[in-house]
Image (tube, rainbow, N blue to C red; front, side, top):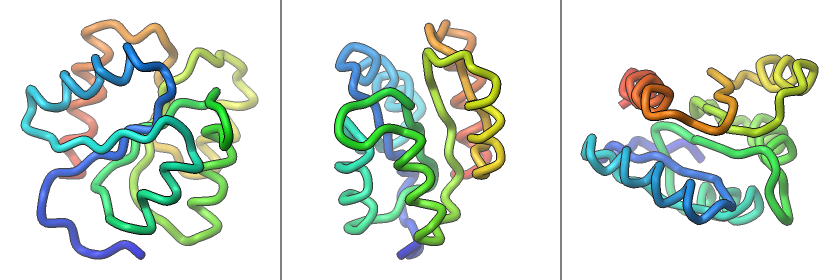
Amino acid sequence: MNQPINKKRVLLVEDDKMLSMMTIAFLEQQNIDTVHARDGQIALLALQEESFNVIISDLNMPQTDGLSFITELKKLGHTTPIFVTTGVTNKRIHEELYELGVEKVYVKPLLPQTYSELIERIKQYL
């Protein structure tokens, strides 16, 4: 399930095309290889095929939303660090995410300095 990883790899789970492209660009500037999944269902399939150093996930997505995706990951025993980017500001949902083991929740819109902080935190796991 969580095999050794030879490259710096991030799984980005995000349905917004523009935000996905921007996040991938920020990560590529740091030489971080990124695999994109547009929802939690596709991300779960990707995780069956390969391992990642870090997961960045949105919450509101089609098919399998971020909360369901993260809950399923934890049930499967995944220990990959997870960062959440979301427009959801509900503190109860944020608390639930932290209880599930999410490293940090970033509220959208993400400003350039927020991306910088996120990348610095991600680098701790690479």
